[in-house]
Image 1 (tube, one colour):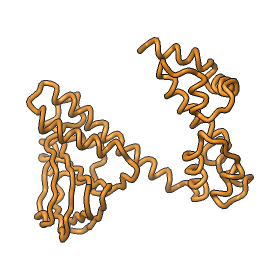
Image 2 (image 1 turned 60 degrees about the vertical axis):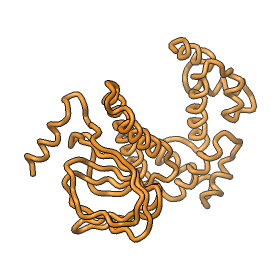
Image 3 (image 1 turned 30 degrees about the vertical axis):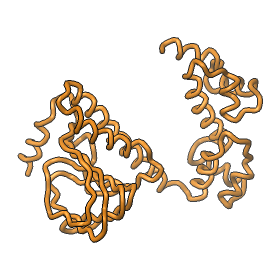
Image 4 (image 1 turned 90 degrees about the vertical axis):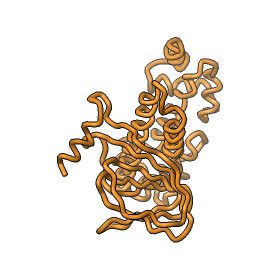
Length: 268
């Protein structure tokens, strides 16, 4: 077994952590027979409910879920109804990605499904191009990095009190609007004072400071556009007063938004 793992890793150049080997789509209602492959496979469910079985484990995923199938794992898919999937197979270094058998939800995720489709198109259309390897590796590594990020957020959410999760969700959906601590607390069914304690304990800031952080992050994105004025940025980030926005930006970045924009757009 170890020699086979070493052989699979030996396919990778020293400077490349992962390399694409196969891609495709599948829409069928017949079973996928028991099989294994020497590469890691990602299966994105695009239609119906997909079931993947191994000798001692069964996982189920609906449209929008992503299966990770490790190398050399015998598995099959018993399908009684129509199931659509998009899949990619790749070799990667053992220390680069956790290839254990699992399924993760990609609810509200826009990047991974798009990147998987991009890889399928690239693998089909420009495989013979000199740019193929560079483009494919770049997208593949982006997918792996995004999976790591999603799973990290899932683990963080498990240790976050439900009330705090509700409050964070409320702020994330409304941070460009005028919203009070009392409104946020009401959405989480707790008192405003207890909400503030939760934020300080778990995030190190107050609810309003957390809202300001989200606004500042959005402001930086807008200011990267050289045609976006400071006034327009302030309005889009929810500030009724441009002067208030400038003061908040200076407080967080030790520089005015105009100068910050100038520094970064001059490099473009």
